[in-house]
Amino acid sequence: MEKDKDIVLQVENLQTSFFTEDGELKAVNDVSFSIEKGQSLGIVGESGSGKSITSLSILRLLTGTTGKIIGGKILFKGEDLTTFSEKKMQSIRGNRISMIFQEPMTSLNPTITIGEQIAEVIRGHQKKDRKSAWEDAVKMLSGVGIPEPEKRAKQYPFQLSGGMRQRVMIAIAISCQPELLIADEPTTALDVTIQAQILSLIKKIQRRSGGALVMITHDLGVIAETCDAVAVMYCGKIVEYASVAELFESPKHPYTMGLLNSIPSHETDSEEDLYIIDGQVPSPYELPNGCLFAPRCPYAKEICQNALPELLNLYGNRLVRCHMQQTEGRELEHDRWKSPSGS
Amino acid sequence: MSVGTKRKLKKIFKNRQLTLGGVIVILFILVAFFAPFIAPFDPLEQSMPRRLQAPSSEHIMGTDNLGRDVFSRIVFGTRVSLVVGVASTLMGGIVGVFFGIIAGYYGKAVDTVIMRVMDILLAFPGILLALGIVAVLGSGTEIVIVAVAVWAVPTFARIVRGSTLAVKKLEYIDAIRAVGASDFRIIFLHILPNVLSPIIVQATLNVGSAIVAAAVLSFLGVGTQAPTPEWGSMVNAGRQFMMENSYLVFFPGLMIFLLVVGINLFGDGLRDHLEPKKSK
Image (cartoon, rainbow over all chains, first blue to last red; front, side, top):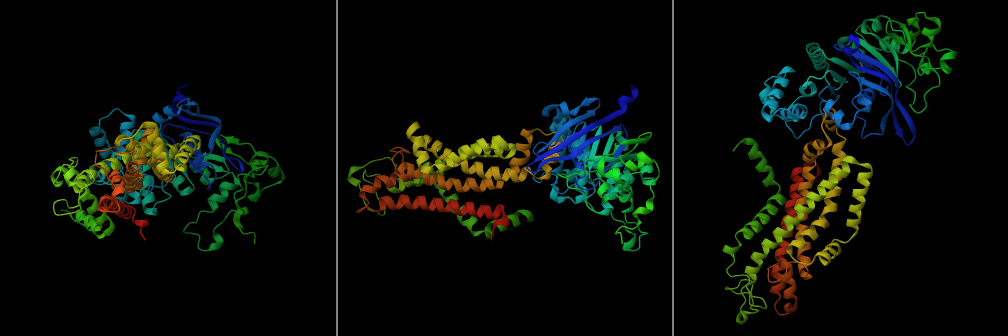
């Protein structure tokens, strides 16, 4: 029981679909994971793999889209968020669960000063008067490393740079000390040098508050810098789950291997050494019957085309969804990835 | 005066439409405000011996069939026109903005129901709609305000709905929802301020059309009632003497024209000023 209390978020068999004119689009298909207090989990995947929809589902922010949670549970501190009323969700959002968005340039209201925008969130969740909320907002700004916070608080978003705005977004997100912070590609829109600053800021804040962090990204480098554990998503499903060290050391799923091999490094001196994963992500309307990755997998066998592999627990929370691991249990050889173009 | 304010003022004065329209509108507002001091005669005072006099140094716009000073009546008529124009725009604007923002924000069935009602209102020719309302509620200045306000509602609703649809999709609305803001807060604190400039422009232009509409209703005899001086009813009253005493319809008509042109210039200039991208 004691251990259960430490679990901040437990997602069980989450299914989110979009209902469009062309049919049902399974954006998140049977996803499960959990995060403990103080832990940080990375969710990595390509565009359209369902990682952002997972985070929007957790906060129940799909209203206004055609998306809908059609199955599963989202247990936050033991309570199922999928059963909460909109009003109850409003008291959780920004207060106990917060989210940092991808686009700092457009995620702030252009007509309101940044200090007021932070103070508004504080006043929305805590009983504070205008003045003390403003003071808190200034404190938050200095906490995220914004110089001259009193002056900056009175400025409008257009007067701030992208990095500064992302710091403001972080200040808004953590203004009520949330137990869970979801960062959805927080550094994608920023310069590389600013990226590193923002990542270390998020990490620092998480350590200081002891809250849980979900880092959503397509950049394995970001995962390596900020996370303890990582879930790899492909076509709305988790295909691999491991601690960061293990994932980078010995990836088990061919897709993860492909991703790791596709990271350019300073050692790659020519185009030949940069690997690509052949083919494309299948259309979400026509998912393959078998393993979702089979059409692009260099290891694929007959069984892969016909049956969807289960998420197999290899040992102590080391999960992989691959027939090759299940039937043969052997290490896949990395060198299959060495001739990317097949030439 | 700071450099910033100076630059803003410079930008305003460079905008000829805005400046000219603004000057005309301000002049009319001053006339309305200081009417008792400007008008040389009591606008209601009748004098049979002085009836139907052509413009002279004493009565610069002549006198009407009851011997009332036309200039004084026009000066006081400014008040009625401005009050009707502004009050009906405020009324229609507030209602229209409310429904438009609700329709745009909630979408789906709410949007369909509100906007179809607006379409029905729009389908009536404006004057017919206003006449219908006057027929039901009776005549008088207050009723004219209501009638012209109802006629303005759908235009505001459409404009605001469109802007709301655009603003609603912006990321910061998602971001605000993600920190637990209620629909009410999102609508009135975060969407409304960002759709304000088209509302202001439309409101300005609407004052002009509202003044014309109110004058038309009074001309038809169902608006502001005698003996209150009103430009539309002055045109109507002067109609029967038009052949010999054309100044009776000319001056009130000219005033309607000048005020409305001034307001429209001001509104167009304001649009260029607030939405610089749309100019040229």
